[in-house]
Length: 348
Image (tube, rainbow, N blue to C red):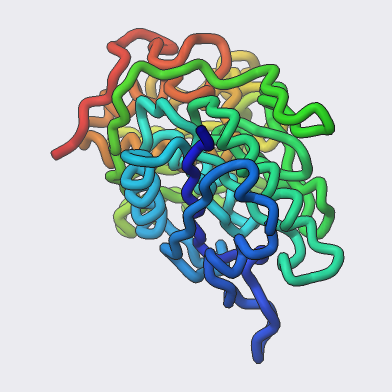
């Protein structure tokens, strides 16, 4: 019996055509599916339009729309394919990984670097591979692009034009698609079910990338602006300058004010380790949470999601340190990285 797979279309380059001011999403989900005329031999494909947006315009409010559409589709379908613009696909894949806890079916995100209507488009292959991955049935959120399958919390866009646009950061590729079909060599561990839609997020989170000479007063502005969390891309394994422009007291002041500080690295690979060098060890204990080997996209979305589950900063920190869906290496999903219980308490 063929699998039933639903395409949820959000727009993006794959569905775009030339508009008065450049490319803009214009094709419906059904029109996109028409470019895979042999798909019915693989599965029973359905099509649903949920958004018509360039992914630069997909924000936390749209994440909730996508997550709810996925949850609804998975009630009676065997899997979901989400077509999405590439520019923010890694953010959406990461946040869906957190919002859709207990997934027992696949949610596959894909897109293209050229519209599917273009003669040289990568869209047809990416879309066909995404449906093949959905039919393979491995539970979890994945990005499928250029014949690679990447865990949703490990995807990172590395090219703005090349077809080989995404890498898997700090984790092996989950799998690939080739002449032998879908080969999942490193699938995500299956989470205990049933599916739980935990789609509350806190958008009041910002990302600050340090540069030599960053003005410490920059951090003072976050409190009056109403931010509840900040991800800091620090130097190396987690360094901050403290000569002349001392950043550390400002970060500690944010912590005392209840703003959660999550520290990741500007390096694409490997993990943060704040005590390793004096430039990180000088930060007061507890003033910041180290993001480990999370990607920036996973760190930002997990902080937004954790703040949406609870208003208690200590509980937020516990959630951040608890591997949930492959975003932190070194422990099984649902196992606290540094103490605490395994399941976040939903915020009502």
